[in-house]
Image 1 (cartoon, one colour):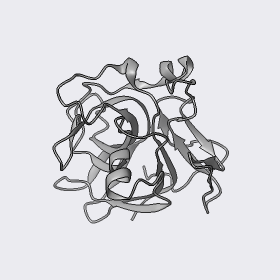
Image 2: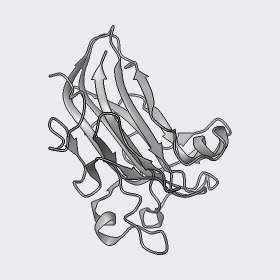
Image 3: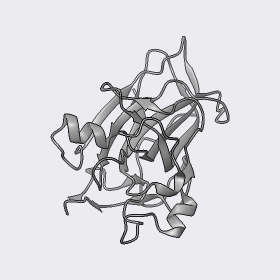
Length: 217
């Protein structure tokens, strides 16, 4: 099976989602600064829902119940940053495509925008995971980190979104890759608190990943 090359307002054909509440097709989306984001493709998929929060910034009950727990799951968390701080994944959402084949001389390409809706100490992030042979119950390959709030604030001058970017990913395996690709967005545990185990109930203000096209090239 190949991989769907774009998205349409007819739905997420060929993809699987963690929650139809948190992962949806959009034609435009408003950032935290009021900018309306529109794709040249016409539609894009939104992963997670930063607007599904109450006046205290906590997830609404329906969003909280729909969000999957990433704490302690698999071996790819936590993430250690260059300055030594840590990010643990809390609750989040994902989009995946199963049974794809990426030849060893090809790369997975996608176009995205990552948005944040709050400041540290929460460190919302997006990552791409690969599960060989569609074994999503096993640990994935090493994650491809797409972006996080910490990156935006410290490396990009505190901006609230990346704008539309292209990302090229080489899968780290000895030959062709056959399996599942999963884009994950998660709220992040405080990067300043390195000794504590995250509590899912404290995560709020998730980030948001918009993807308007995916391909193998």
